[in-house]
Length: 304
Image (cartoon, rainbow, N blue to C red):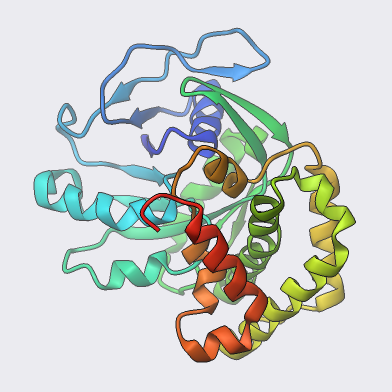
């Protein structure tokens, strides 16, 4: 297996570093080629992970780890298929590592031959110090699977091998589509509850522990949406809140990705999180707090 990481942010850099340290062949795909090493802090050991571009690559992608923001994925593949169609083959496998829901549906609108797709749910904490330096700030896991039943046993066996090869990432392979769908929706609820509130309040995760009433209101609205739109997914409100509070405690000193984006005046993933709930006027009335957050966060980012 040869892996190509698209998106050299915190998650992409973390995966690239651990793959490299485990001797799993990996390279970064970037806008410009570079020979600059990557560092997994606090170690000062330089990791010589190849950095290539679409223009310099000649052979098809084998295993693509897509670690970009959700809103960048569809444009990336549209440009890839238009300008470099030879880089996608029938054997290419795409691992989607994005936050939020809706990316898979966007793929369906593309008039292209799509490769096989697996989803990655990441709960590790990681911090990008600069474009070549990442720190693993919180131990979590990576759950890999699909909400669809079209994944072959051979591909799952390959991911099993990857999990054994890279133990530091604590990869869990989930073969059951219904169970994996539940994992996906729970992670979405988690992000919808934590990320926009930290961005709104300008605080680190742990400070939300003093805002339980806001968490309660936001969670209740999210679970109404889940019940109506994902009836096969069962989420207990009390257990979900306990999970949210546990994450806030374990990542107390971390900043959410949405807060970092707002502070850096970058576009956020709000439309793939809370924005999934408020696409009509009726939704605005049904989910008033989420609607408020979507409008407020959207107004604080470029191109809003």
